[in-house]
Image (cartoon, rainbow, N blue to C red; front, side, top):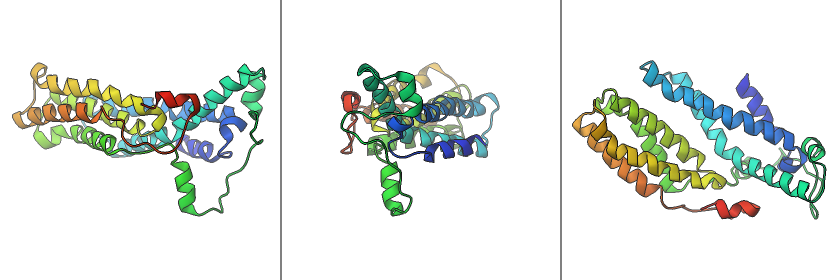
Length: 242
């Protein structure tokens, strides 16, 4: 039921709802963002606390994770709009619940569902790009989550690899959103931990420990470049897309 509400909130309104329906964008951001991250966190700790995976839970977490980068640019636009609109003397709550228009803009618009499906997909993916560095970082995270099954690592190193791998995967996928691209620097810390973890924690096999160290070094290198960027611009937020 919660996923159904998310889908309905995702398709409600037009592409301009960041200024015609700010309340909906804020509600959608709360459901997809913080609540989504909490849901992903519960999935992350399952193998550590219970000792096994839940396939349906993993699929649910993947669905939640994929939705986050596609919603972030709209949330940033809504926040910028509310700040700019309030600074020019417009009532905050009136604009928040009823929408408003900045000088030189139109009052709104609606999404045409008669458009070509490929065009709709391109529009929905605006602001989301997958540089090969972040794609490979996400793959490394997923690989680390399987270190126990592949290399026979035991606790506590197996738990560390799973936890860090899930965090790396989550961070890389969220950083696919251009407005959240700086989040990739968090993977520098995760990569550093992967390098030193086999020396501090027991339970690792020789191949598993060696692969963990190499994965950490690779992750550090992959987290430095920004990667390709689309032609989209985000107003004053452009300076944070580094």
